[in-house]
Image (cartoon, helix red, strand yellow):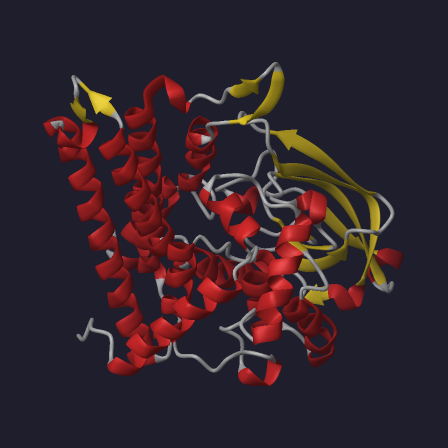
Length: 397
C-alpha cells in the first residue's frame, strides 16, 4: 500500500491551489468561511466559472465533459476546495443524478440531461426522504401509477417528500417512487423518476431551521404527470439505482479539506480567547479535546487515502466499508463545531451589532452553524444505519 503523493500529484495540487487563489470570487469565499448561506445566483456563477475551466464535472468520462483525472487527482481537487473555502457545487446534479445517468440512463437521457448539468443550466435536487421514510428509505409511500391502466405515456405521481435540500431552487428533481405497492419486499416495486419542477401539481414549502435559514423544504406531488421516458433503469428496479447513488454520496462526506480549514480557524480562536488570564489553547483540558479531534482528522485522512489506493489499483467504486468515512467524517465535523462553541462561549450566540442606533450586521454565526451540523450524522443514511451496513456487509455479522 502506497499512501504517498507522487511528484506529478503534488504538482497537480499546486495547479489547483493556484487556480483557486486566482479565480474563486472573494464574496463567495467569504460567505463560506463566515458561515453565510449561498444564493442560487452564487452557485450558478461559481458553476459557470468551473465549467469555463472544464472543472465542473471532473469525475465524468471525458466524452461527456470530464477531465480524465484519476481518483487521486479528484480527491486532491476536492481537498483543495475545502482548504480554500471554495463551495462544492451542490452534488445532486453533477455527482448524484449524473452518476446514475452515466450508469443506467438511455442514450437519449444522457444526451438530454448531461450537457445541461455540466454547464449548470439545470439546478437539480433530490426527492428521497419522506415523513415516514428517512434512513429507512424503503418505507417510502409516494406513488407513481402508469396512465391508462399501465399502457399510457406518462406516470401520475402523488405523495410528499421532505428535507429536500435547496428544493426552492430546483429546476428538476430525481425521485424514488413506488410503482408496485403489492411487491413482497419493500425494496421491490420502487422506481427512479426524473421530474421537471415546473410541472403542474408540484408545491414546494419551506422548512425554516433553528438557525432561521431556509435550506430544506417539503415537496408535494398532486396528480403530477411525468413522461414515461423520464424513468431511469427498469420499472420497479429503482432500489438498485438508489444503492448505487448512495455509495457515491457517502464517499465524499468525509470532507477532509473543509475540516482542516475549520480546525485551523478553531486554533486561531483558541489562541485569541482567554481563560483565567491565559489563552484558551493553553488550558490542558481544552488542548486535550483539540488534540483528540486533530488525531481523528489525521486518521480520517489516512483512511481516505487507503480507499484511494484501493480504488486506484482496482478501478472499482468503493464497497460498503466506505460508510466508515461518512461516520468518522461527520463526527469530526460536529466535534469541531462543539469546540468552537466552547471556545467562544456566550459570544457564539447570534446577536446584532448596533452602530449609532443603526442595525449593522449579525456578528456571530457559530451557534447557528453548530445546530446546522447536527444533521451531518443523519443525512446520506444515519450513522447508526452506517454501522449496521458495515457490520453486515463488511464484517459479516
